[in-house]
Length: 98
Image (cartoon, rainbow, N blue to C red):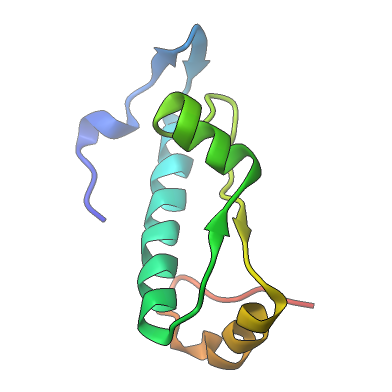
């Protein structure tokens, strides 16, 4: 994904100060989610966003202002398939498991 320089500038969202560092983390998370979604679509793997990620998407049209991760959920069958195919991820991303 390509982000403008302005994306990583600090700002106040819903009364919460968001540092440039947190915005850079958000950019990495969005890129990871983009790559992950593309990989899953290519391999017919279903996943869902949940918890703070879903709340942020719904309530803030982005991230919850104090959140710094992406919450991904999937059925066991899809996760087992992901574990078999994860070598297809491109650097710098990888599957961290057990």
